[in-house]
Image 1: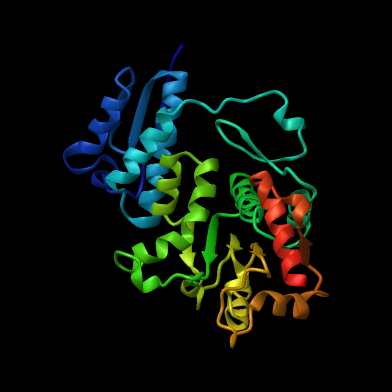
Image 2: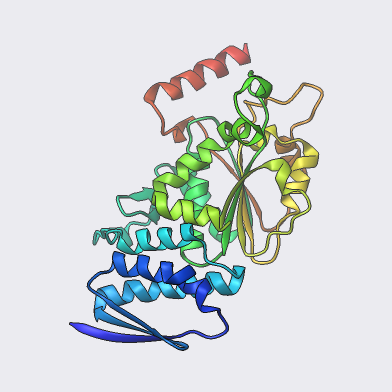
Length: 319
């Protein structure tokens, strides 16, 4: 069934929206050859099948939003918007809405809380603005925290996600890594990218990071900022100093939440420097709105040997 949709455009130069010599408009027409797009004055008219017109309307309204907010629409923005519009619709399974363990549903599968510790993380994040998730490697702290943040963003509870990690060396020297500073820092942030790539399409993740809706930064880059309407994750917090921990926690602005994850048995700081994670645990434990969730060996969701490895190291260290 063919329909017609009109979009009014005001206060935006046509060249910003349609590109130099209407190049953006031509790109969109080539991507949707079965639709008719007509621009006359301040009125944009879309004709075609209902699904196609709906996709075109989303593209143009997002372009108008970008033009209003940033004063420009980049070619990369347009290509990402077209890719998202042409992507297959997410598959939905009737059982999903009834499954209480689901944190966020993706096009391919649902990210679920698999252990009691992860379920406590989800529950505490719903009722507290700051949650500390403390536990050994393999318990899914980072993955669950990212899923909770993505779910909050999808529900429009927050407008952006900020993920931070201390760039602290774990037995290797940052100076010996190849590349410039950005390339040297990238390995520290890679686990956060990996988690996001499971929950967002590559096109959407690229688009959101380019528009700074999702930021993945070294902890040092958080200084001096106030983050409103944001979901903040500080990962590997055991490698943040006490000053850095205080700095990060005090970035929290209006309508913002934070999850702090860490493992107090894997501190890579110099022995002369106090870790901010156990220090925060002592100082903040009785503040309303701040919750501490402790995960243990029973929450390990990696290879079955990881639990045995953790247990063996605990026995060795206790001796």
